[in-house]
Structures are given as structure tokens and as C-alpha cells.
Length: 350
Image 1 (spheres, rainbow, N blue to C red):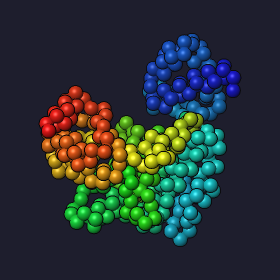
Image 2 (image 1 turned 120 degrees about the vertical axis):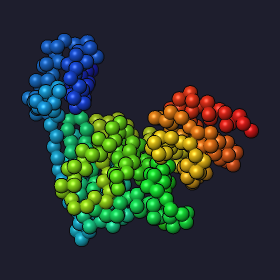
Image 3 (image 1 turned 90 degrees about the vertical axis):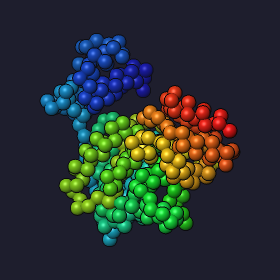
Image 4 (image 1 turned 180 degrees about the horizontal axis):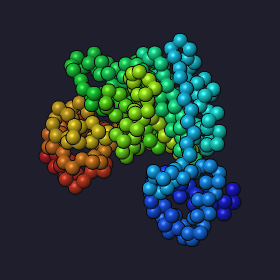
């Protein structure tokens, strides 16, 4: 592709992304971003309409909507192939015009999540929905089984000998390296799948595990409305979204958290997601979060959305646990000055 062709494609992708987000100023922003005239923007708009990747929609602020193709597949316990066969027979043919990197990511992500549904959920029926526009592909896997958080809660209850909440289950999934069947699974699938995609969410029993979803409740609710009409009971719903022409590679993501020479050594805990009301205050909260973290060499505590951290929580993590495991690197990220001040305070209170 020549430089001019690349530039034209960049302009169209930018414009279409703004339309996808229903940005009413998409024309002006495209003009400003690429220093082009309104006439040029309108020409690209006409081309997209003519190629049927865009259509007029009066209900949208922009007046336009991206065309979406949709395909639905049903699988039952009595007539279900293995996850790789499902991917090659049903999913891959729909991804022919995506980048090589996107195909590799989808093969990994789809087979990991479909395997979870096949082997862990106790399903009677699995529904798979593929939605695709000119920018993104979205794949949802919905089963009518037990529900992932209940499954994790039951396993933790047996292991720890105490009652655990759905938030405890969420916390273990965010950490990674957790599985209810350690003899056959490594517990890495959800962690790495969530990192290689643009958007990823798991809904079950009104709890949401999410990565990259800026409005996760809205993102999930829009799917629940659709799928409740198609399946009698939803045990677990996984929603995955990826840019069609992504240049991201699986190796890049694995290298961040699991270098080949060391293995899965790094994790990241989103504190706002695992603490009620995004308030890390009590030592008991900290102890639940710290469970199994001695398995890692580097831990990032992500404080995005956290305004305040209690002294007890901070002391348990950044002094007590750190003193017990001096070889582990504890890193607060996205923390405001108040939170960083509390970290500094407990670290200096020896």
C-alpha cells in the first residue's frame, strides 16, 4: 500500500471511529486532525455509504451508523465439537479480511474462552454470536451452566474453609494463575485473554469482570437484553472485542507479564474493582487480596478510581506483606497524591 493509500485509509478509519462513537463533531474533527477540507471529508463519507459499510440512521446524533453483520451459532452437549474445531469451522471464515495478528489473537482468545465453557460450566447449551463492522469484531459466548463466580466461590470455600463472596472470586480472576482444576488447567486463560483484546467482560450473577470497558455496565447490559430473549438461563456470558486491523501481538502481552525465561511472574490488581465502593480501608480486605500473591515476583496495585486508602489496608500490603516477602516488588500505579502519601507513610513507619 502506497503512502497516499495509507493516508486515505487512516482518514476513513478515524472518521468511522468517530461515527461509531456517535460524535456529532466527526466532520470538524476529521478536518482538523488531517488538515483537509469539508469537501474531502464528505467525499470519504459518500464512498463509505456507496460501499455499504455505513448507512444513514436518523436516531443517531451523527445521522449515520456503521453496518454490522451478525452470525449466531448454537452448540449442545450432545452435539458439540472441540473448541479448535468450532473456531476453524464457524469463526475463522468470518475473519478473512482481518489482519494476521487479529486472526492469531482470536484463535487464542476464542479457544480459551470456549474451552472454559465446554469444560467448566456444566452447560446444556452454548450460544456464540459474532458481530462485525468495518472496524471491530465482537464475539460473545453465552452458556446456561452454573456460573463462573459460583464455581470459583465453591472452590475457594473448600480450599479456605470459610465463606467467600463473589468479590473474592473476582479478585482471584484478576490476579490470574487461578483454576478450579489445577490438574488440567494453568489458570492463565482469562488473565491473558483479557489483556490481548480491546474490550473484554465476563458477566455472571450480576457481577462483572472487565478489562478495557470504559462503561462496563452499559457494555454488558446491552448484550444481556439481547441474550435473555434467546436463552432460558444465562450462567456465564463472555464478551470480547478486537480491532480488525490490530497490529498487537500475543507475544507482546505475554512478554509483559510472563517473560519466556521466567514464566507468569507479574500481575495487576485493580483495587477499585475488588474493594466495595472503591474504598480499600480494612486489613481484612487487604488479606483477602493478598491471598496467593506470594506466587508472583512483581505486583502492580492499580489505584485508578480510588480516592482514599485506609492506613490499615496500606500497612497490611506495603509493610507487613512486603516485610514477609522482600523479594516481591510491590508497585502502586495510577495513584493520587493521597494514596501515594499513605504508601510512603506505612513504608517509613518501621
